[in-house]
Length: 543
Ligand SMILES: CC(=O)SCCNC(=O)CCNC(=O)[C@H](O)C(C)(C)COP(=O)(O)OP(=O)(O)OC[C@H]1O[C@@H](n2cnc3c(N)ncnc32)[C@H](O)[C@@H]1OP(=O)(O)O
Ligand SMILES: O=CC(=O)O
Ligand SMILES: [Mg+2]
Image (cartoon, rainbow, N blue to C red; front, side, top):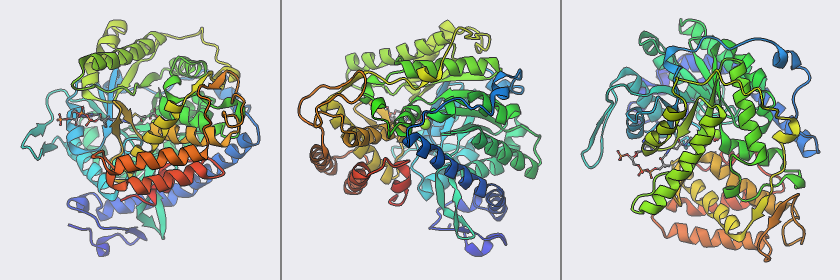
């Protein structure tokens, strides 16, 4: 049943678009009044912080390099720790992530992982239905009433000892056009956070849990402070104990790695950890250095966690967290199980194992997996090398990650195959996203908004920096193009047309949106400047 506009609160909040079955139970007058209040109190600050990002980026474009802040030295050097971490979050050795789709939520809760991160961000395409159905699904999961019957008649129920639920709202940059206040789109972050908190906080409290969140794509401590204040306001409005809302922050932008102590400090009592969101981090490296020809990255497959700038980042994250009593979570290996080819499957699982082994040996307190079949794979490694619930005691005092190490250029190669793969992935992912699917398997790898951003940002960089073979010189220190035929716009247009033709004729997700995705990718790649986010212009074209 659609939500009638006349039932909305006095405030100027409006629902834009056709709501669906059950949405009236989420978009209640009281919930909407709560959202409108969040908007009035925090949206202007959000927009100011987004403007500050643009100002910072303009300085990087002009040649400045990111660095630690002088004005926050006292926070970095001070002796303080984060607040008490709830019992439910003391052991996070394996966390499964996935979109807020009903069946997947049940599968994730039953997967044997300690935590399920329910995702409104990288693995979600924010259609009206996905957003509000997702809230219904989460509410039913919290209340223990979630169930599902597949079209084939298979029934799904949550079993014994489900994973602890942690919700990832969208980042500060994304609007939610289906809800406007005074004619202005709301913040996607405040909508996802606000609706989840409004409908579930009390039920979670009654079960000795809290509303727990993963916070994505922060770039500065002021952005963490805004989250802290929004949570404090929500706690007060909902009559909840102060700091019952807990936050784990993804360090997945290059500017944020220089403010990890500051970000934990801004959230202090509610901070429980940081996470190495490696895929967005790589994307952010590309974006931050979009004007720096000496810091182009080699093709995606070579930018592994063992390259110097990523190794420095993950080790500094562990040292920072453990000094503050917070968890240092690892990230996502992109491999997923491969059905029907045992050798290929074993090779994929071996890569996941190696990644998890590196993480646990470095001192991480837990890790992420993308698929239920990977839970036992990661758990086996963490059980073996981390017998206690976490390894907060591993100080990593040996780590010395300087500014230069954190931004070190990366050696490697760029081949035609790597170029072509970026075109295919960027196209197929964008098409699936436009069709409402936020995460898809492509060539047996998990592809989501973060990995697709890498693909399309690399295309832009390689084509706009005259270091490719068309210009005849290597692009940066230690970076080489391996094929002699030039990578140029004509080749890009040709590859895009060929992949679009193939996708249109295929049964892959997003086949019906192949032309729209191709048009968007062409615009973004030919544009003078590397666009901030793929999902912003894509949102205008979302189904
Ligand atoms: C960069 C980052 O931000 S990482 C975090 C964001 N990304 C993610 O969360 C990735 C989540 N993973 C996924 O969406 C999926 O695993 C995909 C798209 C990669 C692969 O999906 P599929 O090809 O459908 O997987 P597959 O067919 O092997 O699924 C088998 C079963 O596992 C379930 N499943 C797969 N992944 C998940 C998951 N992450 N959570 C819960 N259940 C899952 C499927 O629903 C299916 O269930 P069924 O047998 O009951 O029907
Ligand atoms: O959100 C995680 C990432 O790797 O990006
Ligand atoms: Mg991310």
